[in-house]
Image 1 (cartoon, rainbow, N blue to C red):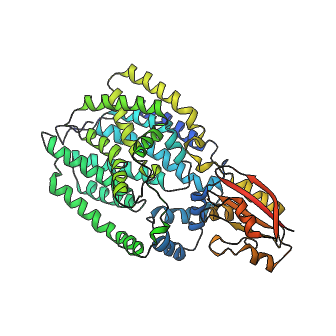
Image 2: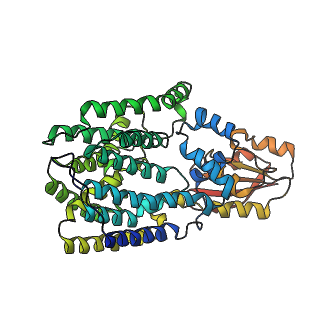
Image 3: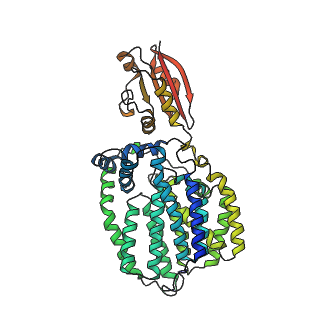
Length: 472
């Protein structure tokens, strides 16, 4: 269905062959996301997730509202998931896989509702094979949940534009509120929805039945429901040391780099951009789907980058991942009219995407460190009186997850000077884990003075080094 000049045109019906194609796409999406799911070790953010959700509920809530400052929905869901299914690599990543596959289905529903059945199938196919989406469907973080709820929220909004009912109004408010309590960048998804709706009000010949005030009432409800978390965040930020904010300003080129990463490379980005431009030309300014696709593509990347330039930087490429949904919608709309052209083009896109989609390490260095080997190496050789130091607070989570020796592990926040360790036990060895730190290994030898000497240093990838110091 194309939400163009009328708010009451009926949606297109997906035929039995269409649902067969949907099942095939979902099966392929599931296979790609399950492939090697538990092979790579958890990286530091995933290990932090396990650390947080494994705590008692009251302590987890205290951390979320005072330290973590991420909305609580994903952590609450994972708290009960880990309690039921354990904290292995496969177990903690499986919810993201399921949500990733559900997102592929929801993008089909959204494309079918905004445009037509073929566009929905094409968009779902692109997302199923997207290397970037595969990567974050295999990560124990909230991005899969954010994408799923964003697509669901947009789908209900498309239904509202066509024919508002009380059930749809309530559904939109509930789903969008859940999205807002998943990740701070959900605010930019709401911004994209509001922008697209306002542009549709201005450009469509027959205004949507929801109207301006009906849409405003929904946004007011969202603001009231999200206000408690805004208050929690503002109250906590007042006491935050700005020197602890680690996100930097990466320059205006981060915009192009974001879209390149979402697409899977420069060649894929060029092809998707050409298809999206054709989709914009074909749809015309009276199509709500056009405005929603453009708004999702821009608001989740360009707006936070501009805000980061003139304020405190808070943009990372992965935070704007919902922009990929807009890119898939626009590109699919650009090729959906001609069946054989669409089939050939999607075949080329999949051929370019699949090599990267089956090797998710391509996306960044954050999966490069083999934390499992770090923990196994120490655990196999450590002596009861040895001490372990971690030079980076974020690496604490990964080291403690794989080491599983709290009797030897000294938390990063309470690490002692090497001289103090020597005075406590002159015969103990010191194991030092360095990760993405400006402190060179030689600096630790200087601190050791005449007490210790280098025994060895191992490179475990991703800027991680394991150093062993032995007493002289």
